[in-house]
Image 1 (cartoon, rainbow, N blue to C red):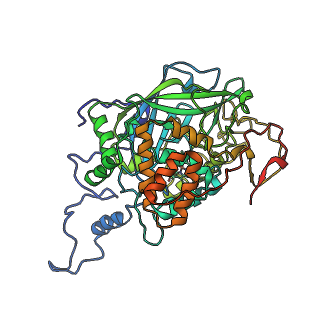
Image 2 (cartoon, rainbow, N blue to C red; image 1 turned 60 degrees about the horizontal axis):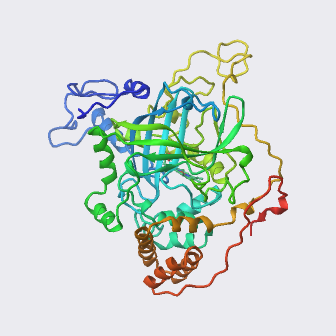
Image 3 (tube, rainbow, N blue to C red; image 1 turned 180 degrees about the horizontal axis):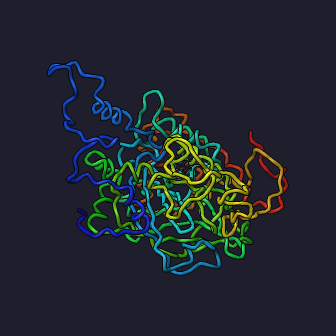
Length: 536
Ligand code: HEM
């Protein structure tokens, strides 16, 4: 039993019906037949051979043979917990989402923290981005905020994501290194992808080696939209602010911990919750009125940019508390399927090309990872509201839909007949006006790759800057190609001369001269397609 009370919520109550408790029970097979001996197979005589008819042996081994499912293609290593979200004050001026308007509701949540590059069994203390995925089980359906502990990303377009991940993951010939960015393919990719410069500053900072999941910030990264009951929209960036503050370990500590306890973050989260030290974060919103879309010297749709908090302060609107550990890692943490496309009325997307690609990717990968189109019926993924639609069948279907009508429109059934109430209060996409030519291109407003990288480096204290210099020196020190190291030094010199020269000194390499990248700081709302940079 847990040492302290780990509270129930509506989702935990929903999960109860699926829970199994074998204590004091007698063992039986999956068909419910009592088992008289679970240790000896059926044999022709005491010394065998074993008999094929032994259905008890066959069932036990067959099930075991099929226990594994694919790990997540990224973010394979993770830990989860249940909790609740409580709103401080209603936000009707921005959004009609009920869980952001009704302060009397405690919205159940399930959160999964993760590293990105390593496999399921890799160390928690890798120098890596951390995933911070939150599923809100709202009374209007599930809303997933699938973020990271860094506010920007490596690339500006989802088209590049498979390339990024192929470069980040262990190298394909020898599967080295596990869960580390210190290798050729990673730095090769970064060195020819200047848009990753801002993210690489975060990745080489102390943010990449958190002390605890409880002491990390979280960010939705992309600019999203909020939409209120009058249909008025504003832009929003989502933040999670840990009430314990942001803390990291030093790299030497990280390596020590990885050797002694690769489950360090998982254990920390579990133990904190078991002992009643429930981790807490405040949800923060940076709101930008629609009319201010072009007010900044960066593009709100560019996921390699933050909105500096001096320009738009973060308003704290509610609190997330993780107060209950999962009962079963596989059933809950491993089978959880997060997706930024899971939104509720009042929350909507923008045209950020990274966001748009993610909208495709998550369901697509979950279809194979979780075995087909019915993974939303898995207990951890089910919304707390009933599901009614005409979707049917498929592998592992659990729901027994009544009636003979599973189509619409129809005139003979009770299921959504002709005047079906399909749209009353339903999700209606924000009717953003789009009038453009199709182009395979990137906006010029996405081309300033260095200003915010500089901003980040300059925001660091002296010890933090030194940690970054050490991180670049260590990581690039593992790279075999001098061409890659030199290209990286060239990029670093565009961020900060001292950073580049100290890393260059550590690597015994001179800093090459490379030209500044072209920059175009803003693009007018009525921009002509001719203003778009063709892909070369
Ligand atoms: C998984 C965050 C970009 C594809 C995840 C997870 C997080 C995350 C937190 C782990 C979810 C979990 O705990 O189960 C982000 C962030 C991104 C980003 C913050 C950029 C801002 C992308 C892009 C793609 C992508 C651009 C593809 C185009 C995936 C896939 C998974 C994943 C396929 C595995 C999902 C699963 O198997 O359930 N991402 N991601 N991500 N992400 Fe992303």
